[in-house]
Figure: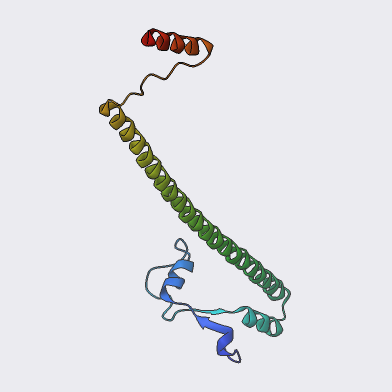
Length: 157
């Protein structure tokens, strides 16, 4: 378009054009577009509003500008949501790492406890196999003292 700076408009790619083209109302027969259409940026639309003076053109231009602002707000929301998702993913990754570390530590403790219990069991088994039973404990108390005196007297006589 004459007088429009190149950074205020751009030519659509074939993929963009095919996506935007209305399939039901566009003829696929001879004729049609030989060149890909141009699209205006937000700044290009603002510039057009100064050129177009009819009421319909002004209203269409206002609607287009509002659509640009809504798209910009939506992009900010999507961008913010993506940032939040990345933060959540990082937190989940950290939680998984912490959980795996905790489970590894717990397994080490369980293995140590198991080893200690095995050592205790082995020691008890060894004591049982040695046949070392404690000898009879000496009797204590008044009756024991009298019994020893009687034994001593009987051995002295």
